[in-house]
Length: 321
Image (cartoon, rainbow, N blue to C red):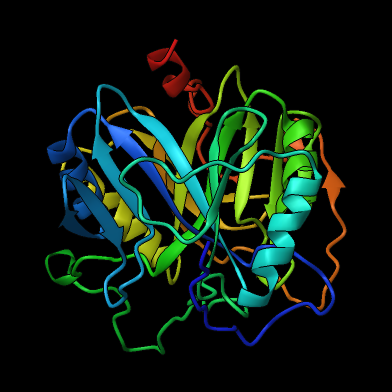
């Protein structure tokens, strides 16, 4: 296997092995035209690629997400990135855990290595540039002096556009087992959890409070993908941007406890969510975050509207039952 050359990012925890970024992920949906409209309205740069779609943020050529058409919505695989010098040691460590490496899926060009997590989720590890931020991303709470109007006319507000993919939250049948597996194989560290119901994990080379999170369900699946915004105003404008096109179901605006980010979730046509997120906690490369275990009432949100009753329902499990 020939490894591609990756750019070494300026932050790296010395002497420790772990992925540095959640590089991209893929999924299928029943209708690409519907997906195109949803994510384009959300503010992403949606590009036709082969028989599917690639999702980008404007001003960047990094593909955060790929979508193909199939009979139902399904998470296909997650791709994690490592520094070049960590590629072979990471592969050896994963094999030493008794994990069987697999060939790349048919039709996928890859210089990475592949394996399944304990629940059947396909994982790729590859060399790629660090896309997880090296410091906490800027956040605006600015106001204006007296005599100056702060808000533009709504007709002149313009389209809001996410800056990057922040994280994904996955359903899993066993949260503690997910923590153990992703820690031992990919070097992710636990940020916080609420018992066996939900957990949040970060990268050791400097990352947001979580690159990936896991919530308890009967089967694997995608709960939401989260997109970084510049401030609360951008989250609110994004929510209205979606509502104006009929995407009114979701949850927000509010502020989370674990991760601290401000949020608004928009439900997609298949029962999962895309999240506008801002001001998430950041864990620097030289900081050892003290993970907490919080009761459910202290683990979801600090303020905001009541959470919808089916917010954590895994519709993907229903589709694939």
